[in-house]
Every structure is written in C-alpha cells, then in structure tokens.
Image (cartoon, rainbow, N blue to C red; front, side):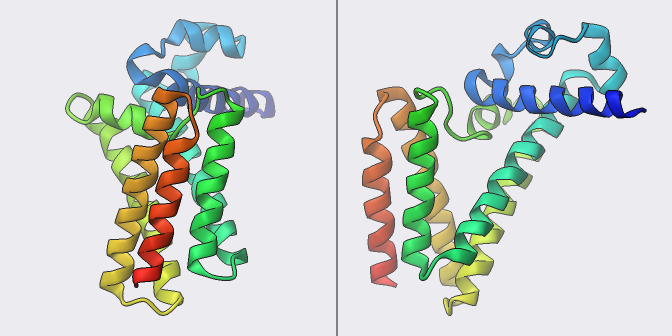
Length: 191
C-alpha cells in the first residue's frame, strides 16, 4: 500500500473514532463514513477486509491510545496525584464542553452497545479500559501507594469520570464532572 493508501486508511480510522464517540457503534454507518472521508464504500473493504468491526476496533484503539498518552503526559508533569487527577477532570470537562457535549468518552458508548453483541469490539473496549487502569495504577504505585490501593483508586477514578461524562453529556452541563473531580480529590485526601 502506498503513501496515499496509508493516509486514506488513517483518515478513515480517525473519522470513525469521532463518529463512534459522538453517535456510537449502531448509529455509525459505512455510508456516513464514506461521506465524511470522501471515499467510496468499496475502499472500506479494501483497507479493512474485516469490515465495520475491524475498522471499529482500530478506531477504538486509536482513540484509547491517544487518551492514554494524554493521561501519561499529565501524570508525568503533575506535582502530586491529587493535582494530576484534577488536571485530568479539567481536561475532560474542556473536551466535552468545547464539543458542545457531542464528545464524552471515546470508548463508553461503543462499549455499552457491543458488550453483549459484538465480542471482538467489546474485547477491544475492555483492553483499552485495562490499559487506562494500568496507567493510573502504575503511576500511583510509583507515588508510594500500595498495589491494592492503587488498583482501587484507579478503578474508582475511571468509574467517576465515566459516569460524570455520561451525565454531563445528557445534562449538557459540566457540573457532574466538577462534582466528580471534587469527589476524586477526597479519595486522595483519605489515602
């Protein structure tokens, strides 16, 4: 595959990432993807012989890895775990507000839609959540927390921001994320 082919494939992955986040797996059609990328439907099957599921998996991995890189950069630069978590919540708030509440978590909508119906996609969602949890667990252990506490805090944080993103999106308000951020701060004051 030449440079132009690779660029087209990458563009399709990136556009699919955005569509999945905004509308979910079921509502994202290949016709819509073709319109957004300016490519014929046949190109999808040329670049992704596994069809929509293969493209979805690659798009989710793309989004999940991008967000993980962001998490890692925040964690490295933060002066403390509490500050790092505050920055993560602030960035998530900025992201959802700047998208006029169209964006939330790039994985959650698809994860909920496919958990019982599309095992390969569901498995990729679980893999991404595991990656994010491991990123936070590793950081917290490096900051002096026990493995068990780091694991529990990481799971609590992920649960807080996922729920808050959903509520913020539904309510078209940053308030759920702000409340969740304050709750997250309390978790670190207690540990």
